[in-house]
Length: 369
Image (cartoon, rainbow, N blue to C red; front, side, top):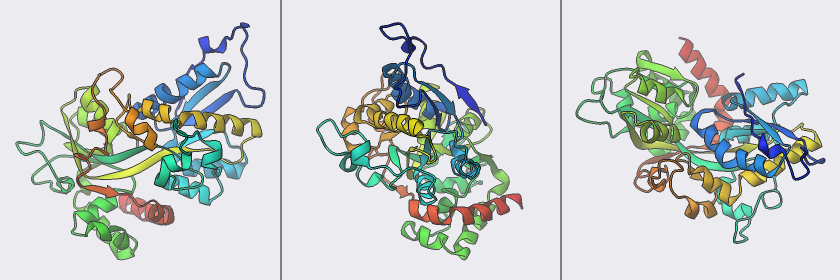
């Protein structure tokens, strides 16, 4: 487990009396779980640092294990020792954790902040409240980046370029899980967008997707962390690869790498917080206090200063401005920008909540062949 201890409260620990304190009804420390990299840094800047500053005596530690959140929370629950307080997960994992009783149910209008104009949290988040346990933060997409100097005279415009090793020879990177890969494989094997999940719900459809992936299997470097593909692209080890749009934004705009974005068939998804069940009353109270602050209108808009993910609240969108250090307008870099969203693929949360374990097993068996 990779732990990053963040010293968040040095000067903030001192109050007017010169002594450190924390609310006696809430725990004074939290373990927050996220994904590391540019995304976690944006959370640190937009949510955690200001929360700590406003709550002297409270400290936080980051754990970068969100990719393994479901398995680890299952194990913690089984052992009766839940050590995490607030966990960042994708929507499908939140649904699974909620269904299994491993995540706390949230009353949005009672436990989350209303919009500045008084609009209730449930109306402000709207359809993005896909689970009773899920507190949305961002709309992001998984899409492809490519090396602009390695694709020849014709840059790719279709997601199916990943399967075209004749036109675009070289290694490509894909995430080491079935989600998104199976959908792209079926799309590029002729399945209509609206039929993908019906096909993928059958054994034959799963075999079809794996057969398409077989055509590039020898050319794939499999990644597990969101930072992997940007690094592989920067090092010239792959010609193209999938990752989160915010990671590519950081590589292109902040690091000035020779990388282009391929928005075609980008897969929209949601990311947000869950609070594990099994916490003491003091830890649960602190976790609820933190997520109420971290998901208010201003904080979600503030996150967009640091990374190109769309805030999950309607009231946050008009507050999205320029990048904190680059000074560039962030709106055109959002996956939801009309120019970028001409051909999107909508992730089916319910499908993957139902099929994830079975297809995972099949996918891992295929990888091992």
